[in-house]
Image 1 (tube, rainbow, N blue to C red):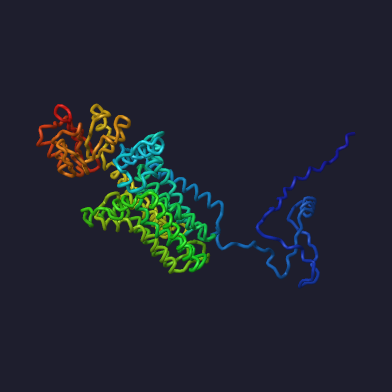
Image 2: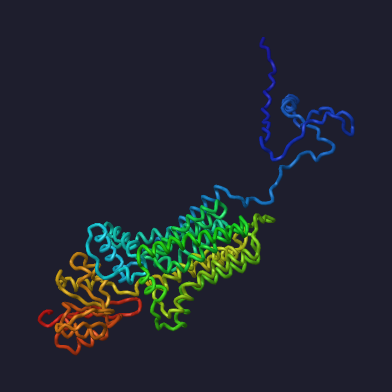
Length: 587
């Protein structure tokens, strides 16, 4: 007989959730001490579980802790006033550096998009640098008296650029300028970050990186990029060492003196370096020590400059190119209009930043955070020094009534005004990027202006490739040549000719066949009449010096004939070069 047994089905498993290891609050231990009701006994949690065994397992796993009668049952962790801190952090530093790298890439693209053959100043400095190199290395005799009319020491930048040109050509010499301008932007960010904060530093670097003068000088092989880089390095040293030993400030003296030696007009910005050193040191060291630092820096820089001037004998060049330069005829209204076009918007933003900074010195967006807030007078003095420096080059060229290189010189002052322009952009955006549309609007406007202006200035001279091709068959090592801008053919033709064979239309020292010594217009007329030059190249669109006198002599003389013309186009219009050769050969 079969026995039937009844089997109880297995109880379904009960999933008990694991407690959160970090719930965001803290439980207090069971209250076993005296409370309102005497001893607080342990109480087992009664759970609404249907089966008694499941209820028993849950009860064994979890216990209900009786809260203290005087507490709410849990304690929240301390909550900070803000989700971020105004203190320095490695994360903010690396993010800022990545943004700066992006700005440097944009600056590089803006400079490299400018393409043209060598300008006359570039060609002059490069072939003069090759001549100086030959004199230094091989004792080759120098002609032309470069030290008498160059606006910087001919043994500094021209030699450096020529050494690079020997290996990499004109593109390499221009890449040297690009490296200097990228260094300026990086030093500007570092300096502004120390004066204000990272955001102001990035905005300042952005304003400077897209300016027309920055893009232009970044692909232009002249003194300016190297001189500005040295000034930027001296300014950074002054700010960086403001809280250090006073003797460390002297590190800026040789750098500033070298900047003046590279380009004499850089002396205009040495007082700014001294005042910047006094202001930054005053904030940390007090007035007596700050003034002592300024005097120390000024005396050391002046001593180095006097020693260099005494050793080199470049006083006449400094007078002719800088301190006693010939006065031009450009109207003041035109100079002011071009200054406003090339740098007016950036300076206006810097003025806005100065006013805003004087009214409120707090740079942090964190509520209630003030940090080491400088006084309003100090803030006003800093703004006056930095923004006022942007007006030095325009004021100097207004005094001379000339626009020569004004589009480059504006970049010097813009470097010093850029920190306050960075403050202006940050104040327009507001805390936590509340109004980003203002920064975007300014960025687009500055970028479009900078690109179009740099392109126009970079194509203000003609492409010389067609002219050089036309000249090459007529050039040899024995000819004598006259040209409005002889520097470009001398550089482009290289070893096919020498700068000693060429004469500009500015000056001439000519002895006639009868033995008379003539200069100026009379000398040019006599040289044309006696067919002294093997080839004459005149620029009809940009006559220089005595070009009109020479052409009149050519037209009314039967000794020369027009052998060809080379048309060209610039950003300002079209014109042509004229090539004149003597009838039957020169004398």
